[in-house]
Image (cartoon, rainbow, N blue to C red; front, side, top):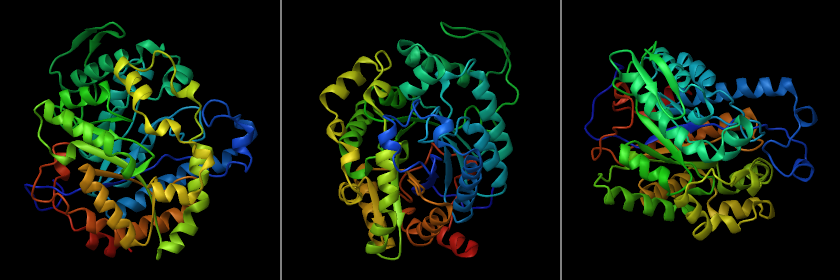
Length: 424
């Protein structure tokens, strides 16, 4: 058990999320290509030495966040794109697990996409390894996966993506906890003998988080299984009120409690000493992110068959983001709409506090490296956030709710301000 003082109620968990994008795309990239996915030619835009640097910089940035008191480190998985290329998040997670040995920080895999992995017991093994390496600090994230990742990059039949996901998740959960060897004879996976080595330290299961971009069958399944729902949106807390309100209505309709820790949210953030400095400092990187990295055409995002009926109806009838031309907006527009929260520590923490309370967020996933930000600027952003913002957030839900979606060994009272001060 890590050193700490157990509390009945637990704080907002503030985590470092990282996409690991290509940070040096050519200036005319968005004119040369119609998509950040699939289309860009590696030999046209990529420098292998730079890519190696990005991987190592990303690991350094995340390890710094752990050192400065962040509660968790979040990896993710995408394929064949410049927007984020942690093609195997388990490799990153394993490095982070070892690099944070003895620290009170969760390794959050958000994560390996089950429909694209055959058999899915491969993911069960990798995650179990990370849980063992970390000493029981794994949060197991299982995204359904973007349609472009599944159908285009990995050849998954679109109409099978979601049913493969559901079957794979059931198989992984059984493989982690079954006391005896078993056979699995499903529609998509057939395994004669399943006897997983290793198993996670956390039994019967590590905490499970499932990402989604809106309220659909995914959110309903998450609530039914009593896992944590992660709203991974790049449009900010302000734009997420509809989704959050529908989510909490869904939670109530299923007879679940209103524990904020069953809801996680992602937010882009840039901190500087003053509002004016922050607005100027992060402008080019915000525009790079929304103009170049979020360049995803509808034919790659809405592949026929990938969406279930409920998701399709929602996308057609209630999708306020559909009419937004991201490439026509400037940095000030992203700031005003709350897509990116930038400003002095006081400004940032006030906006975050308002949004976290309004949406009832229990796990705040901070995207502190976005777009073309250098590792120097990213580390500066992390350090300012850890020192002057994070300590004000973490006591929001204290003494009210137990975080059942967090590794048990990490459910301890921490003093983040002291951690950040001692590490600086």
